[in-house]
Amino acid sequence: MSELPKKSTAFFEWYNEVLERAQVTDKRYPVKGLNVWPPFGLSIRSNFDRTLRSAVEAIGYQEVSFPTLIPETELKKESEHIKGFEAEVYWVTKGGATPLDINLCLRPTSETAMYPMFALWVRSHKDLPLRIFQICNVFRYETKSTRPLIRIREIHFYEGHTVHPTEESATRQVQEDLGSFAEIARAFALPYLINKRPDWDKFPGAHYSLALDIPFGDGRTLQVGTVHHYRDNFARPYGIQYETEQGGSAFGHQTTYGISERLIGGVIGVHGDDKGLVLPPALAPTQVVVIPVIGKGSKEAVEGAAKEIAASLSASGFRTKVDLSEDRPGAKYYAWESRGVPLRVELGPREVEEKAATLADRFGRKRKVARSDLVEEVRKDLDAFHAALSEKATTRFREQIGVASTLAELKGARSVHLIGWCGKEECGHQIEAGVEGGLLGTVEASSPEGILPGEAPPCIVCEGTPSRWSAAGRPL
Ligand SMILES: [Zn+2]
Image (cartoon, rainbow, N blue to C red; front, top):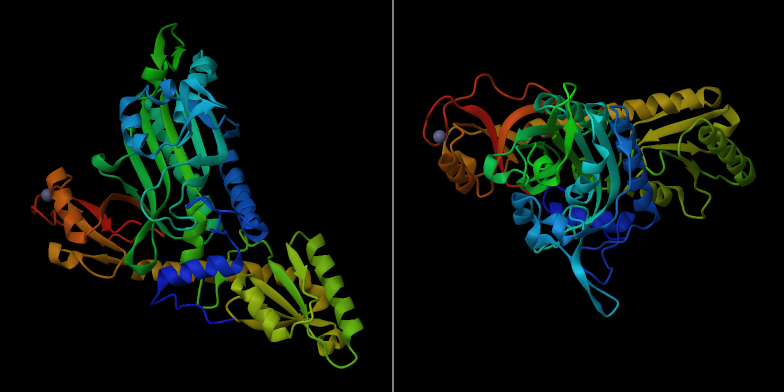
């Protein structure tokens, strides 16, 4: 097989090719932006969903499932929201040959599907807080050129929705959601920034929006998640009202929390290398592959031992495969490396004789261990691999974030420029023009912490104070 394009010089060619070769998604479906998930990619996606589920269930969310179709009348109840989405919505207008009384849209997100039901579910302060989520597909008519996992028209989507008695309680939820995102990002060894989007760029209908941004390839940034505070902006038009403890009536305050398959694209783009995918153990469909290296007359003994090892690793909870194909060991190594398998167990006649095995991780670090300790050593190596992956990503993350003190410095290859911004819209638009992209917003936090170099300088445009550390970049 021909070599992959280089990640450092041809990022998007590399990205497309890595996804295609590993069969993460297949974009050849006859509708652009609607991709097929083959078994390998779907297995990554299932691991992704499992990580998300356990992180949000740990903070009290419960899973639900809502219909895909939303009546036009419900979609239009909140005026900002519909303005933000009307250019992206797919419509169903006929049932068979009969025009529908009320047009139905394919959900672009599920506020307007859920909130009429929330109005029925929420009666009293005892029903609050309400925290539910669903993992489903949403549809957005994307007009820019599509890109697998990143800019698509049918999107695999996690969405959490909450209702609270007060604005403060909803604000606390926002913080809890960020805490659960930190867990998810830790599992995927992914550093990120939390930026409060400028008002002109917040979610349609939101009081404010926090975005989880990562530096991506080719000097771009990628938004991989969002948490929005709605106040009672949706509760009022949808009638989400409850009886207070004192017997009065009040509108609920709401939040939402969204993560899509984009985050998978982010993980692949950040960790992958010139050999292909590099997957954190939490996402890898196969965490450990056992490869028999057969010498003359040793086939039976080596393959037998390889199968035993694979069985004992599987029984200990590792997603394990044994490769008994006829390919040469080098070809097998390459094939599994390109699919991002974190750890390989190599087993030859000598290892069988010595009751040992050689462990090699995706970064090429090798060591020989005793068969009797194998399960424990595999666990250690997977943990060490995850730590090394995280460290590598963090180093790169820091390199991709620079500080700019003049508009002229905003042009350049770094993904994120930290700047002072006074908060005024007119300055914001000048910053956006300077960076030929977007003002990602004020930096609220980051993982790792401590990327802001001291107090914020005056606004990069008007030199006004007070000013806050803000981030500018070129979002995909
Ligand atoms: Zn300013």
